[in-house]
Image 1 (tube, rainbow, N blue to C red):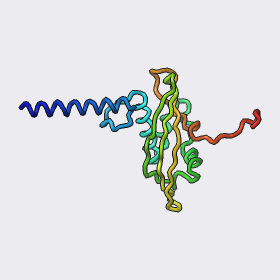
Image 2: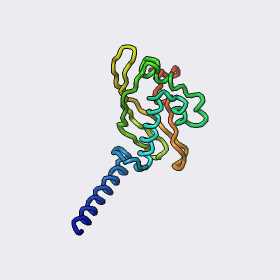
Image 3: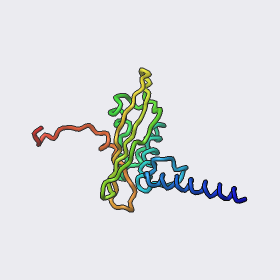
Image 4: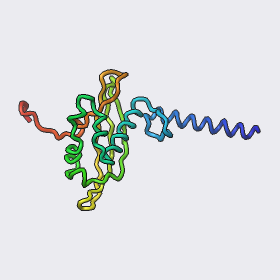
Length: 163
């Protein structure tokens, strides 16, 4: 009886320690389906849900991660085509991974670095890309909204400035 109680206590401490580390890491470790990790964990979960929607070509759901006034204007297939130089129908997203999630000092702006592995169905080549998804919110209690167009935009020089 004493050995079983000791074993149960040790397992409880190990499990509690693991969940503590998962929370402090911002969700970098598997959280066993629990909503741990604070804002960084929430951003990881949002980014993973977005990538799953993109993987299964559910662009309407993927647009819902943007601010309500932008949902109808976000053209996710176009942005993906610009990123991979091939139409989204010819992409097979094989794997994706969150590299990191970080917040600025105000906790109102964030970025999540994503590594994605795709197979181009036209020529059967496999490519890996890394990109950063940008998020923001108005106050600490507000939901996070993605700014995908800012994340995947191509830089154009400012015509009013000398380069």
